[in-house]
Length: 335
Image (cartoon, rainbow, N blue to C red; front, top):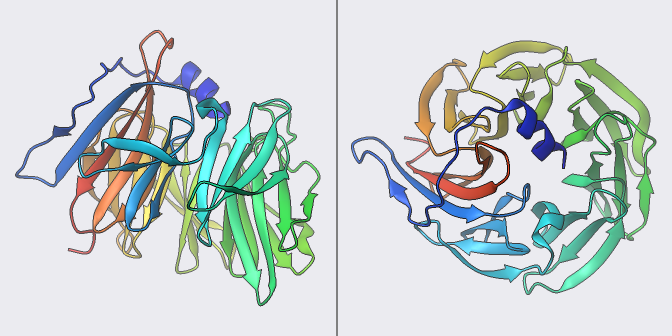
């Protein structure tokens, strides 16, 4: 529950009324649809694409969003919502990170009918997933965040036969994973560092290479043309990590507590979870092209059919209520 606890102490955001009706903003600018769903459990704001539809984790599973971002009945998954920490689609299957932040720490794999195919026991507080494959050999890596402040975060490794292995502790809050060729790039949030591991047929080659981010609190990364662009809470920026030299070459200022980041190859999109904005940045110039007001607490992002979708999580002024929503920026990302 690291994201929720930290947000409660360092965010200053206004309360938002429950509003189940979407809001369409100024029609002379890119149209933005905002839909607020009301209260619910913290975390669990994953968005993904399935059969050309955008789905959001909600009410114990995945639900399809219609054009106005209204949520339909949950069609995949039947969990307690507060136990869903993250969801990803890998090779047509849905990987749910399930945790009670204590003793229950599992990865559940479901098919598109919502049937559970596999359950794997993994490390403390599983979150992000990433897959590597080479011929008939594959690994799914699980970022086990660990307990905040305990430096017990690790990586679980699941081979193509379903065997699960776990690394020793590698830092405090193992936040996100990216596979780049035969390397695994790991952002470790509260240790303020990047770890780079070679991936082999036997798993991760230890001990890996470590790069400090100088107290930046790294969150999420996207990779394009040999560079990793990653968001940072403490420094409110996107840093540019050179995957050949392992140097941080540049920083691009964005909004408060940037979280999700995606790219179409030419443009970066950054969700600033500590405010109500999504930034659009041109990769070649590193300049901010536009800032979109999408409603409080944008977090995870996905691109579908020329539109940018973001899940949102935000809180009442006294921190007693957690609210959820989604927003969509209607535009072509290659215009």
